[in-house]
Image 1 (tube, rainbow, N blue to C red):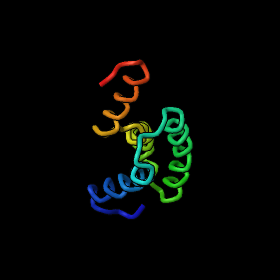
Image 2 (cartoon, rainbow, N blue to C red; image 1 turned 135 degrees about the vertical axis):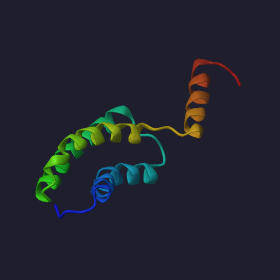
Image 3 (cartoon, rainbow, N blue to C red; image 1 turned 90 degrees about the vertical axis):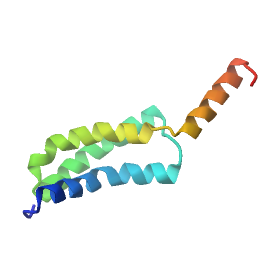
Image 4 (cartoon, rainbow, N blue to C red; image 1 turned 60 degrees about the vertical axis):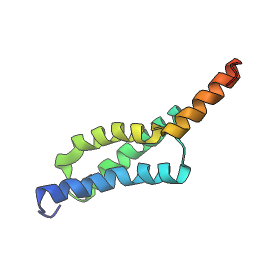
Length: 98
């Protein structure tokens, strides 16, 4: 990897690691189910290693693991509106009336 300012290295790596899950969440507009989020995280882990090895960024491999775990939370994040809708659906499923 070419020598850049340290903050620029981390900014570039941040974009590489967090752009795909953020884009998926923006397009999907809803939190993903647990199993789907885990599959996407595991499936993205190895391509990240291959990409980072190809660009010569091997010192950042620990960051890949941390980002993979953080991506799970990006996929599973629920906005207040989503959480409220889920709570209302769960209450109505249990027989509670609003």
